[in-house]
Amino acid sequence: MTTAPLLPNDAPGKLIAVEGLDGSGKSTQVYLLKRWLELSGYKVFFTEWNSSDIVRSATRRGKKQNLLTPTTFSLIHCTDFADRYERNILPMLKAGFIVLADRYKFTALARDTVRGCPQEWVEQLYSFAFQPDITFYFSLPLRTALDRILAGRPALKYHEAGMDLGLSPDPVESFRIFQGRIHKAYEVLARRHRFTRIDSNRPVEAIQEEVRAILRERVDLARYKVTVPRGWR
Image (cartoon, rainbow, N blue to C red; front, side, top):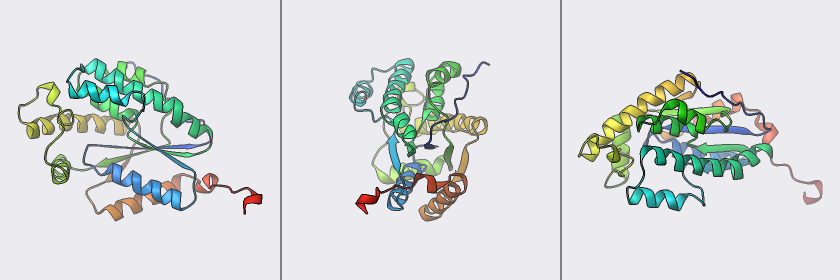
């Protein structure tokens, strides 16, 4: 199997990505990490999946009207990612910021291949993007992820449950099948890309403490302190 070459981050900034199943708690953890870094006086920028101002409305319309095929689903998310990468992520890395990404290209590598897109093709789509310096992978049992989601809202989202794939007429069963396949894809990616695995089936505070400790150990945070011009002190 031919795979796209991995592009290391050679910018002054650091790229930290978080990945995991829906309901894994990764968004809570990256938000807490962002606030801690900001309050500690570090240069930090945050970006999240499917949030491009240019593309987001088209994605929502395509999902709402169920117009997206696996290929167009993949391409529209890659367009969103590319827009954020070129407008935000790369400039901030070059400016020496710590960039926190709530989902990165690995989300596409997991989801799009499960939807039937060839792995090599998806890898080539995202081959322009730097590898993260750290990828935190928040791992927990599928049943726990489902329970967390249903505790927070009355129903599963259509595409979140993989209902567009016709796996099962029951959204909960479709979720189990779809997210179970994504979990297997993540496990392969975790080994290949050396994710930093975090057991997210624990209290929020304990997880955040571990995430911060790993960041301190692997990143020279002093380099990313906000500097105040002398005349402003």
